[in-house]
Image 1: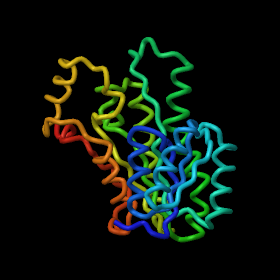
Image 2 (image 1 turned 180 degrees about the vertical axis):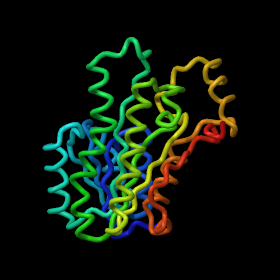
Image 3 (image 1 turned 180 degrees about the horizontal axis):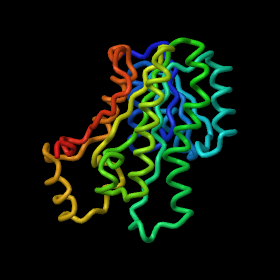
Length: 249
């Protein structure tokens, strides 16, 4: 998969799965534009991509703020002329029992996980329609299908279910304009979130995965790159699990 001459915008690219996706696009010769609220960490990722020979730039963006998103997208368009690929990876997790969830918890999870995807897609869609080309990949979660579970609670599951529904709708509306829209649903993935778990908890989690191992961020990135490549030119509206077989049940 070669992303030479492709302009890729990625939210949440400063750490975890998002960071690996950003680096993967860099290795595939893409121009990688990172939108992140942790600008210093995002710039470190951009510098690593540049060091390895590809082009990258980071923008301080709060995905929960439409003005912040709109301003950054306009700057990207003005600088690079277009946006070929959008990956929505920014997200937060909430693990509280539902009865303990507050309005503040609801607002944070829904604003980052769901509203942020709406804002970026809504701002970029007109440009992709004009170009008659675009690839959008949203990072959802198997929690959006199972109603939470593993690390996410009902609130987290609801936010990711919203992403799944939005993905399908955008695939339907974007198709006539040459826009492919898909989502990736990771299962338990070996990121910082898993660090600090007791051995018995890790073992229990792994025993619920048919492949008996956690996904790596690279496992997720590989599928994201495929879905946003021209190899997947006739794939749209797919909600692809990368979970080691968890959703077989």
